[in-house]
Length: 124
Image (cartoon, rainbow, N blue to C red; front, side, top):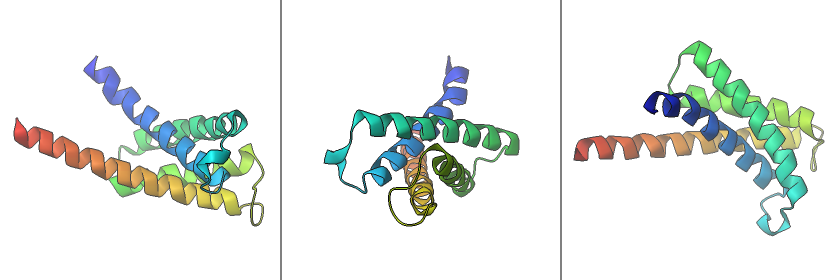
């Protein structure tokens, strides 16, 4: 069971980070404007970007947080560009902003988890 968590956990984390970044960017931070349609579009971006990031990170065998965040951010930007048209700026502006947001979110969540694991291990 622990081995399953180690393999599936990062995939779920990457999907959630990419989806969240896409949702927030799509409504330009206005969370009251979120609809089910937004969730469907963001979920498409999140799942595809999460799978791409998981595969790329698995093959690179890297667990450096900044590399993981860069891969997820880049994957999210590329997938977002192809999944739906941008709602602001040029055709690629929203995708780039979404990718940056996914990368930053991934980095912050990853560092927070690492700090939490370190504190938990020290307390044992």
